[in-house]
Image (cartoon, rainbow, N blue to C red):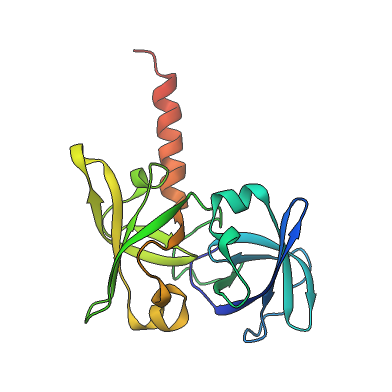
Length: 207
């Protein structure tokens, strides 16, 4: 589990092709964390397992399914990524609970970088039903509050808007987003659990 509170920015050192996907090597040296092998780290919102660590460089194996479901397949050497260690029982829950299991890749459709920095992001049906005004959403591993839900015809949710405070812009990769960029989205885990239980309950009711 994670909270969506980014603790550091890492930088991609290498992306090596492998038969099962890619091996992603990230420079963690700006971060004080020295992870054990097998530790879970959120990388741009994706839960990855540390398979190697040497001289400040952490390696992660990313399988084809993850590459298909997230933006990790687009990473190149030099790219910055948001980092967060797995939460513990002592972790302050300043963000919201997420699993690091990306629901879908959204697309940035508008960036307003005037006095009030805002992003508009288009999403698909995996995320839309879990969006509510002033609810929570994780964008590339960053816990954010939904400023407004964007609806299309017949009230179908097509996306959302978030407002970014200076602290978020300073400590994460979100400042660098541009129109048409893809972003990893994960809806609130409690919302998904409740929705799943309700759907199963309704499916088993006899009418």
